Length: 115
Length: 114
Image 1 (cartoon, chains in turn orange, green):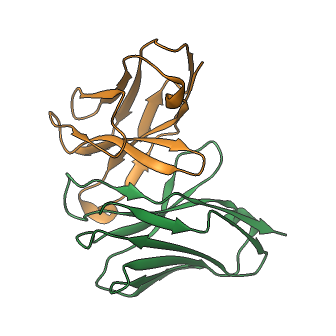
Image 2 (image 1 turned 90 degrees about the vertical axis):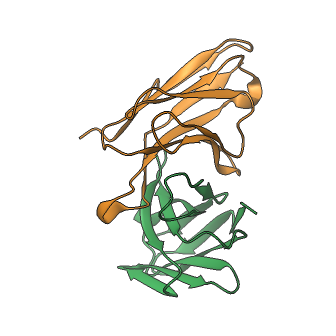
């Protein structure tokens, strides 16, 4: 049982380059989330998706786009990377039924450096 | 009205002592208050959570105290152990809504001294 899988785990970009972070979950969850983690800033919500076909902005959406490709996959795209986007990115999915209702399940993170 | 404020930013506690981390929220619609634990290089994982129909929830050495009128909740770790050294995040959201944002505090780096 893989849970939430993120790729790549590490990436170095030059300013202005684009890239997509991939996320997939195998728990049949409807809701999925993208967070970034920076020292002293905690986890800040970038975008989330309540269900397949819907996406909504979080606290820090500028500079990012997302796609909810299907129920399993939720990707995060940086169209023109900036040094301020250097961070660790976490994808998560949320249980809505059963004993784990409300719980977020996180991937192991993608460490992105923009030079 | 979406903020969750967490303190302290870092905490050092002697082995066997009590670790206390505090959070305050603004949005009175929130009805689910979890704490997540994160070890270096890993994603956060749920530690314990509370809903506002109770003022306290205990699971082993971990207790959440909840004060609805003050819009505050705290995590208490009794008999703190070196293995508890990690970063802790509080969060707040709507329990039943799949469309709910889940807002996190800024995190507390806890170190337990042997």
